[in-house]
Length: 105
Image (cartoon, rainbow, N blue to C red; front, side, top):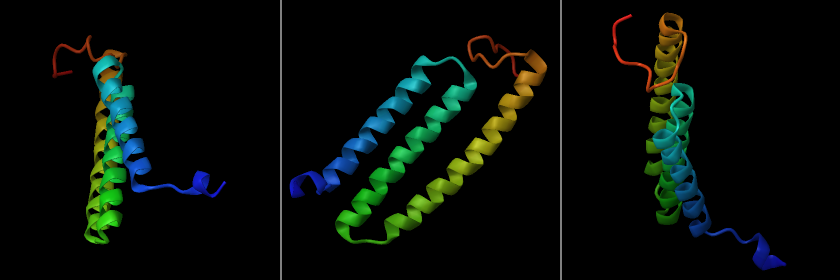
């Protein structure tokens, strides 16, 4: 039963790859801008998991600083992206990426 509780670095990297793949598929397949923003956030979080895994593997704390910067950039991206999507919805009454043909409102 002890082997079941052992989680190695490979498990975290597999999780990061799966989350990144789900996010990439979400960006490529979905047409809703909100779903695309959520998929980008998922990809950034997958990158953070990989960064923190390698930082822990090498015993280096600088990876935590980089992950913190990525979290700050992701928060700014989410705020600005959501503001843009809300403004587009106010002007066009939809958030489908394929239907957006011009930038001025």
